[in-house]
Image 1 (cartoon, rainbow, N blue to C red):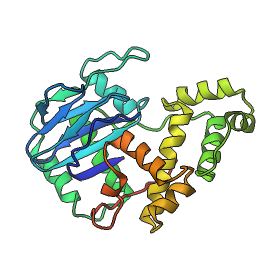
Image 2: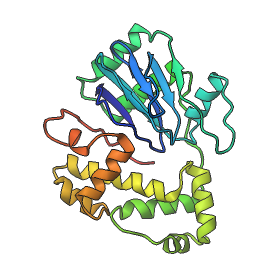
Image 3: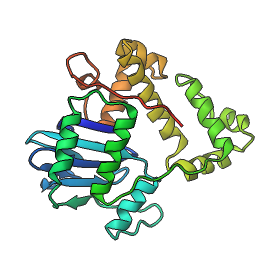
Image 4: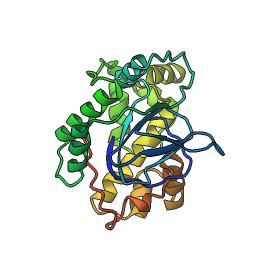
Length: 255
């Protein structure tokens, strides 16, 4: 996911995605431990499941979210000489290097442009190159995991039992969970939660009320969805999903 726009000054929060941030004006402020002093930088890469807060008091910023198990993130770690041991968390990578003016101008102009998913991918690649990463090709996925993803996305509001999902792809529940995390770098329950959040956004962008969208996506009520969204992004969903926010989400097709 790629975000371009004003800083939202979120509370401390964490999520399973890796978060890459580039200041489009001035400098970023970031911290990742309660009570710790803010650090200033031009860009930062924050690993998965690390509580953090990041803002740009000087203006706009670019945020790129990456999958924890992606080649993109591994290449950034390699570039910075960081060895990621199994299960270990990596402290945020603070970057003081000046961001090229050409990239700043490109990202800034994109805020007021009508972007296609292809345009967003081009910007994603440019950000990765700035951070020391590369734009990796998709890896081959076990057909059983592809079938599992298809089942989940066909019914985003349905509350599946783990045994039911495992039976549908001919695996034991424990084996299914192991393969899913090995392929996608995230436990299946966390993926389902992320998928439901995405579905709420899709419905809200299409004009459905947040309350109805939350119910249709498997949340017990709007309060449940709001708590989940705030815990993952550090802001209330109403800050983004309302007619006054000016946010235009681009929902890319799933592979």
